[in-house]
Length: 497
Image (cartoon, rainbow, N blue to C red; front, side, top):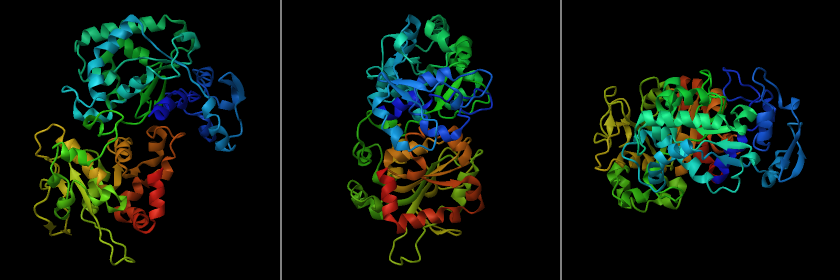
């Protein structure tokens, strides 16, 4: 986590080559220089910016200080990435966290809720649907004691605004007075804009994490923190899940990961086992297992052998309302128990295809299915093409069922929803389930895949172009399923990564 969130500071370095309203994330003019992103200092980011003109990295100064060493920026983008990797131990990006009077009060308003989440207690007023959007809490928690933090603003390259926009958005802080929050935010803006560090680069070296999808629209930042702050925020760098800036809501942006659906279920930074959800009584074995696996629910074979996982493909979520790939998957993939022709003794696995939140749109039975056969599909699993209602008494029962079923599956189908982002990617990482990205891939990598310099996404996930999936879902998935059954070495390498 330190490495990933620490990379937030350096990934956006140099990404201000373009600030046009139609650009996604102030990207480089020369994409071949992408491999340099995590290694150059913030000095490049702020000094390469030109408010009216896009410029390539090659037009800027070439020298940066890494631990008092002068290093020439490599102009040839084809240089061996390993040479750049060797510089990692030398790079530092000193940052300063604002603690002006108004900023301290804004931060303090939400501290109790933030601490509860870190300690595994989900706030009553925060919707569970926002479990994927609380990056700000983990981000700030790790910064206070980080070795890059400096108490001298003159030595800093990056300036952090310690505010919790998502918690404030949902009135999940101790003081839920909107007017008070607006007044404090307006005062904080004035305090920051009067500092020499603001005047240095007009705010582009100032960072705020604002990851809820609602902040993709102008009104919500105004509603949460007031008009003065919303105007101020258009000039700074923001951490977002989707960095399409066609509405001109930020000066620059860095794509950051979602938080996992696992977040409300356990204490931060602690190891997790899906069997703990059963031991805690959040779900019952019948909520997540086929009949023939109930006897080994607390010690399933998959605890010791990943290839013994109960389900092949997993999807659980909303199906209708502008989500065509998901609807198609329910129609074409549910009950498709793929089996290799070359392996007559292989037992095909069942799948999980559970619809949630669409009861008025579906005619699916509730999960787990009692009727295991259908006229059109034949034999079908207990959690295939059914409506996901968990009868547990705990508010986390449905989330627990989601995580357990995912952790019992081999492939996590990450369909795009209303946009190209998907929190399901990090859910797959959290449960060691291999992600299959099914989306408009160009836009997904352009706007929504984080830390591409740190994480070799294309090596540890599978991907299917959305238009290819639409033509024939089964044909699109067949090569992936073939590899899953035939080439355990390739699959094991993805898991290792």
